[in-house]
Length: 583
Image (cartoon, rainbow, N blue to C red; front, side, top):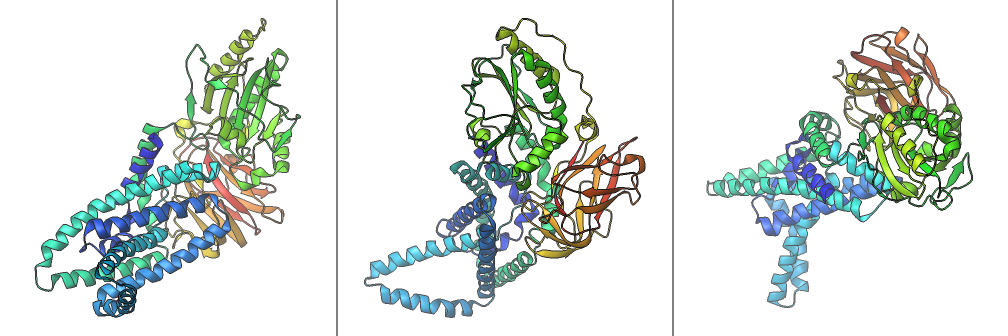
């Protein structure tokens, strides 16, 4: 219920977001008609169709995206026709004559005719609302981003659609209040000679302008960028108030802190793994008598990588005392589902404990987990006794391990804690200096994209970098790229990505593309070679190569941390860029 309320409030906030502007003319086009028989059905149709389309887009394949594109084309044609009929009422009358004649022929009685008229009066705005739902592209702020992320991770289900319906209902509520106010203004002005006709024509012009704006991509380009600063901060405060922050990229630190380690439930089934690495399949029954640490992670998640040194150290320190560490690798990006990529990561990260490949999110859902990284501590009786989400609290977590081992009958457990110094991407973050958030490049969750003209989805397009220096946390593409739901692919070299950031470390999740050929790149900071500020995957001149799908550390500032402009130029085509993370 709390998540539904959060989604609803997020929808309500869209009324103050510039992203709603293209929709307003369509809604107000019928402000002169009764609200309950016209305005309300329009808003219901908009909410329902948006929720259905958004669900399909979040969990479906390319067919869903293509279907939505064609649906938008049809809706744009419908809206353009609506705008023309508002400007030229006689055209609307002519177009409606065949429909009226057909209705008269089908009607056998006067009361049946009246009933048919009533149905038509409701059906028409419902269809109009459905068309608006196809066109509406709300800005993916923190709240909608959480909903769509959950949809992608958990698949199509009643909760996903319910949250999207709640979000759309919130937007519909705001629009309903605005529509009621607009209706009163329209009625007040209707008495003036000729006023209503000019209002109608003005709305027709506005509808055509909005249709043109959507067709040119303003709703997902300029208005999206403008909206980022208007509601994102409010939405984030709502998210923080209603629920814990997400682990991946948000540096979540959420823990059960009760000293008595109360029982939180039984160890769920581990049977959903599609494959096990470093071990034969393990079951909850086989693990009885052992203290178990379950670590949910994925190998391109920077927060996960920074916790790995501690998990690895605990596995080594307590392996002879009855501790079993199990890594549950639940992928965020499609390339992380490749078991060979995971095997390579285990070798690079020196992980020797068992790892379950949870590509179908079966174990994730069994634990009702929502975070990367997430640690669950299970006692020798199979009870979950403690959990921690995100980075940090390492000493507390190790003390829990010690306590559970002693409960299991181990008497010589050392009370000291491991001393870990991570290097490269495993080094701890300087959180107080990080002012840049995890930033996705695929359009499913992209924010702050400032290339002129905005993003063009799923087709190759020539992008230009912004003519002026981007503001903090804005980014841009240059060159011929295809932006997909999860990543952007460079179709022809050269091509580049610019990002204005404030953090010690800058990482970028990259892959070499479908053919697997290495991709050379060159990094600059404020237009110069990074020198001493280069990352683990670049040299002092900024040179590096993308060889496989993983997280690349491109910047680690040696001295002061301040706001700077990062640029990476790819010298070969085919690279796939997924997400920026910072530390």
